[in-house]
Length: 391
Image (cartoon, rainbow, N blue to C red; front, side, top):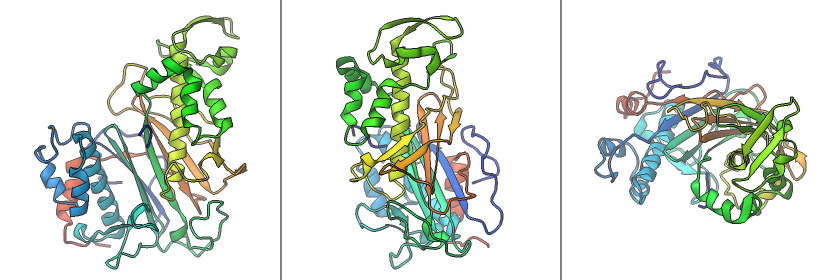
């Protein structure tokens, strides 16, 4: 996220949701989704001296080490190191090559293009695609393997990528993004300018219609006791854009409600970040930045923020929440029909969105598998440094 700035049979890390896709049949394209929580990894104030970090650093390239050690804060260095490890893990396992033979380059622009697996001549390897996102200690990867699966098929892509007429292996791209809703700086700005002023800060990213909906629409409000008020319950109180207002109203069912508008603003912020997460995941399909010239022409409709897996202010470490898959994607006022998007809540404040575009009929993004650093990553790397996997 940019703002203001299946592995082992037994998962050793955090609890994970059921795999929504199940295992793929032999010969079918596969989608991989992994999550790594770095918040308790490599403890200390410096990645150089953090316990176990040197061993992990030895598994990535010198260029990657330079990027990792340039981070000012160890939390950012942890995520950067975990990102490098996950990319190499995915490529090694997918291609069946030794860890040391993994080469990572970029598609298109050698500096800003989307990271990809490349051969020894630095040519992108057809048929696989992956993307990484990290935020506040979490690192997520989505990967696609479509090598040698089926004959060429065509599709209509309004953005012009991947190439029309390409085979399945070349035409599916993936993107992922993580957002954290609980950003205290947001509230300071809202206190001064109102929610409407805060939302308009992002007018170069979101369309007028999207921003209007962020300000004045709400899908639900979570009360302090964990129950939810619907948009119908709120009536025109959904137009409130100021914090700390006392709202008194009666719901259509006859219940008298006293609500502090702080809870309404929190619900709208969560919805804003849902939009942001969708948009970021989509543009990462091609590796473009949020300043892509068509960014305001990319719109999302029917946006619903996924409910957290835990009651507000009672967060349980590693708990997954609601999964939402019915958003509509439009570009230049036309629906984008060859994309599948999903967003899921994690713990109280995180949301993770995935995007998949191209020949995606029959494909489904599975639930994230949470990886254990030692059991799933380090052990694999050490056992496969120079050894090819058996077919």
